[in-house]
Image (cartoon, rainbow, N blue to C red; front, side, top):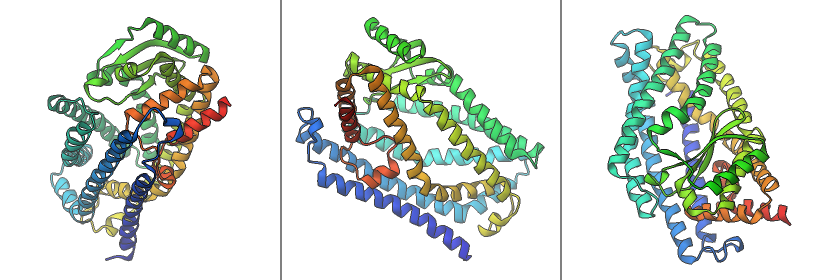
Length: 414
């Protein structure tokens, strides 16, 4: 076996092993400290709740480990043994360039969906059911899965077809045109998703609490954000988890509240959550993330363009017939290895944005007690691990651990 191929396999296995080691560290840390009730949660939780939290996190981690091992084995077998056969089989039909690409990638996406289905079913109807989160029926799960598959086929097919068309028509500059198209398409989806795609899965109705809606509009006006509508969504048909979010681009926003959030939080707590979301918009976090992600995408697409000029990858992975499609699959595999060390960097900036949004929420709302009680309820409702290992949080947490957030808010309020 080629020494470079051995190095690639070793690097991939190292990334996987590090991920499992982080999971082990986190579980060991939780078992050591998980029975301790933090002062911030005294009177809110008891030992029985902590035991349930530990059981939930342990069970999910173990299940995710099994699913990950299976998926990694399947992927390694495919990339090193089946990709060559699959590539030759697809090419043997002698279809046009675009149709061949559509068949190549759509069939792979269907295979991935099929493989992940048993794990999704077990997670939803076994683990989430056991701990009282799942509200879905098998019929609803099947309906959502079919809808998702149809929408994914349409959108993915469009991206693939246009991308391959640009590659075919502009061999020397396709990397630029593909990047431009993906950028425009992403922004377009941000516009239409709330009106076209989301209603296919959820029912949106105006919030029927006039006092709450008045408070929300007053808060948003204070933040300089125009609100078109305030909706509640029937999330309780699927889960008991809580959430709230903004949609829309520009100054005019549409606010969506989970009905589970409305049931579990009082008016001031809801306003604190929305003030936090307003902080993300006012601090231009969404715009900053788009700029960073698109800059990275630009670099990645250009690097891919350069690497695709030769058959180096085809030779390295012993693919009999050279094809752009096989090269792209190999590049995706290599990208998963290269991106791993950057994960802490991306999560660091995400956590900084969350701190800034918390700070903005406190500055505009001035109610530290409501912010803290909202965080406590969110943690309780999601059975969140109150004692994550710092190294695990470094690699996996897009938000600061809840105790850090609460203590920081207390510091601000004196």
